[in-house]
Length: 112
Image 1 (tube, rainbow, N blue to C red):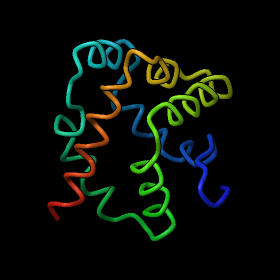
Image 2: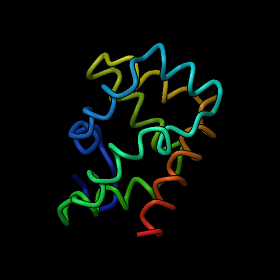
Image 3: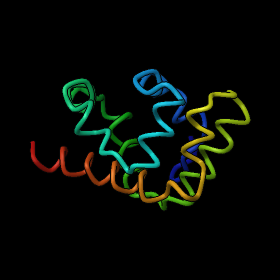
Image 4: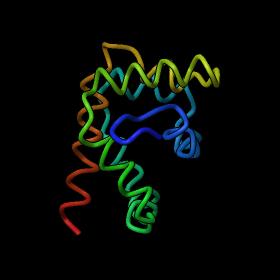
């Protein structure tokens, strides 16, 4: 990982979260701008709270990144992995969905 740039290798380790949302459901939720963080809070919160320092830094980088930059990385991730969830999240029309869910993670971190 470069110092201030997120890469596919950085997000690859979180692919397990993608299994929580099959692609057909993820697309439906993205269209409806569903708050997935609150929907899966009981599964997400313990993982976030138990991150080691390196992963906390990576999460902070994601949370402070520009959404368009993240979507470019997600597009690259799709090209490398062929996981449909990345393709869905890379669509510009779902920028608000990503932003809202990242805000919910920020809120979760601030509330602890």
